[in-house]
Image 1 (cartoon, helix red, strand yellow):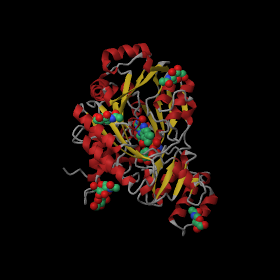
Image 2 (tube, protein in one colour):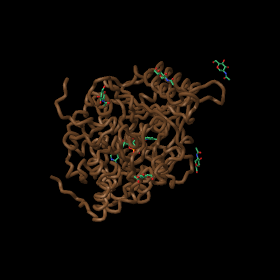
Image 3 (cartoon, helix red, strand yellow):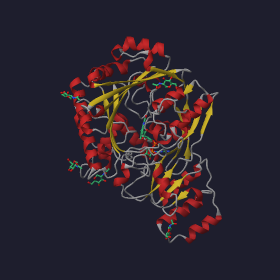
Image 4 (cartoon, protein in one colour):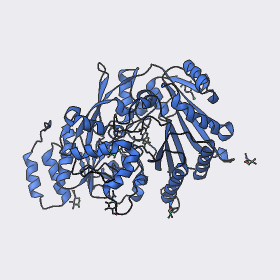
Length: 531
Ligand SMILES: Cc1cc2nc3c(=O)[nH]c(=O)nc-3n(C[C@H](O)[C@H](O)[C@H](O)COP(=O)(O)OP(=O)(O)OC[C@H]3O[C@@H](n4cnc5c(N)ncnc54)[C@H](O)[C@@H]3O)c2cc1C
Ligand SMILES: *[C@@H]1O[C@H](CO)[C@@H](O)[C@H](O)[C@H]1NC(C)=O
Ligand SMILES: *[C@@H]1O[C@H](CO)[C@@H](O)[C@H](O)[C@H]1NC(C)=O
Ligand SMILES: *[C@@H]1O[C@H](CO)[C@@H](O)[C@H](O)[C@H]1NC(C)=O
Ligand SMILES: *[C@@H]1O[C@H](CO)[C@@H](O)[C@H](O)[C@H]1NC(C)=O
Ligand SMILES: *[C@@H]1O[C@H](CO)[C@@H](O)[C@H](O)[C@H]1NC(C)=O
């Protein structure tokens, strides 16, 4: 068996404590277990009695919609200050039958990192956020609680010509974000975050810390894209940085319907996945009320180029002349400044904004996703525009595939959506009012489902694929009487394609008792599947 590389200290005072509390509640048993299994953990434990409990709980709950229907709060939050605190949380939660929800950045669209239908504790990783960069090997160890923004900032601090391919949102937790793949505007050139991960530290269901060697290649395969929640707790990832030019170019071109947006969006689908790898153009259609006049749709083409304006304009003239990109549309800047631009911050915002680990304005939202393998015909785009105008509070983002994503086979990591995809779409319906009249939540969720249904004829099918980082609890619908495994096969095929069965096999190997579990985790494959 693998060696334990952490020895559990036993402070005698805590042993005494656990004996005296043995007849108290499960929570107290759990808490005293923590104390006996770890040093100085008291400062890391918050219970509903602690004054900062609510604020800590809510600060990293990215989607306030979750609280509209959540039925319970955690029994405790362990804000781990040391890896041993996370190890103790596993050992003690197992012993005292609490479910553990692991939270790094709290951006799970369905709040699975901080809610549960059964008694649970939150293991909050935000304090474990060190970033250790080694320029000689161009690698770094990044702890789970670090954010994407912090990682980008620390890399840029060391080098103007290094970067890393990960999300465009700068408050994502590395722990959850990489687990589902992690994509951003470098995806066509360098693939996903996990394609540039070379090692990891994982706490398994027995509370041991494993690395790539001790976990073995099957587990290391599974945690790259399989949603680590099912396999253990990511303590840190070791990444290989990539090279970027000292100057990159960004642009945003916007067109409304009467400026030819439909034709351009139609053309974009054919062009964007086949552009040179150095160019990434996101398409973002959203409704525009046109200053109170007739409503329209405004389509933004947001571009990133690993090079300078002159070359970009030349390449665009050859490959996508219809967009009419000119030098005046383009901004040159360093790679880290382009992160700030793509993060949606106003031009001129200091890169210090990348150090903010929580976003400032929160909205209620419901998101769904699709993969497209064929071009949406113009008539399909027009149907989409009608939906956007009718719904009002909605944004669609389409991110082009191709390039590096075509070169990696679907079985190389657990992330299966590779060749053959033109683009991935995200549909987000959002609202700000908490009551918003009767049934705001129900109404918007219904609208998000209607939009999803309208796009069904054009999206991938059998299975209709989805992105696990865009968690959507709608897609694993449980027909009455189905076993957990049958339900999991439905969302498993959508999220992981042909990799699902191998993931279930790895799960059986490392966590046969299914300790690490949530509404859409991977169940252990214990019996041969029935066909
Ligand atoms: C505003 C916004 C923008 C986004 N932009 C992008 C983007 O550009 N690219 C992209 O790929 N995705 C994007 N996402 C999706 C994002 O990658 C996922 O929501 C991701 O899971 C967030 O990770 P987290 O640690 O912040 O979230 P959390 O809610 O903390 O965790 C997400 C999931 O991972 C589990 N988990 C968290 N930490 C650990 C850990 N240490 N070990 C094991 N399991 C863990 C949780 O239990 C949960 O199931 C975006 C999301 C939002 C809300
Ligand atoms: C919280 O406070 C209540 C009331 O004071 C007390 O009964 C309970 O034991 C406390 N719980 C914990 C976990 O400290
Ligand atoms: C709105 O559209 C209608 C029909 O296309 C047109 O007749 C009308 O002039 C438009 N109004 C404005 C303010 O643009
Ligand atoms: C962005 O800021 C730079 C300098 O800070 C300025 O030259 C440029 O015109 C601005 N661009 C836009 C689109 O506002
Ligand atoms: C949402 O749709 C369901 C099913 O069609 C319906 O029963 C429900 O009333 C709708 N809710 C709202 C708030 O519109
Ligand atoms: C599905 O429903 C059945 C009962 O109808 C239940 O036993 C099972 O736990 C459910 N599975 C999931 C994954 O919700």
